[in-house]
Image (cartoon, rainbow, N blue to C red; front, side, top):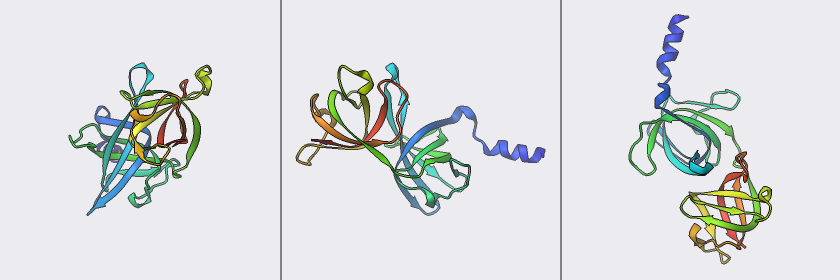
Length: 197
């Protein structure tokens, strides 16, 4: 029994050197030889309750624990782009863009790449913090804050790709976004595709 506890403690990384990302979105998956790479984007709460999107490539090896939300073991080949995962990874990262870090644990929360569609009028655009707000300016409960990541595609009326700074208050948009959101008011979620109508 004591031997089991000691081996379990050796396998677990020190708590202070671990970053935990909840409700992260798998952006990309690749592999070479015996190493897998899973690029995820996840929100980090900043000042004034603004969520900043971070991106990291997780280096997955045979020591990485991969499970579903029910605790059943999965393999690297079970991971798919678009899945929502919780991840634990090393705080020691490379200086590349996106940075790379050793993955300790990946827990698949949602295996579907389901998304939702919301249409609304743009109220404001914040290019500094990479988000825009839609809804009724007189009803905060109708508003939604959409966080824009590097993988968010924004298209104008003619189908040409544009940048966040090209969105204007008053534009009517259709937003494909994650099917999860924060409990804040207004709620925040990640935008996948934005189409100006």
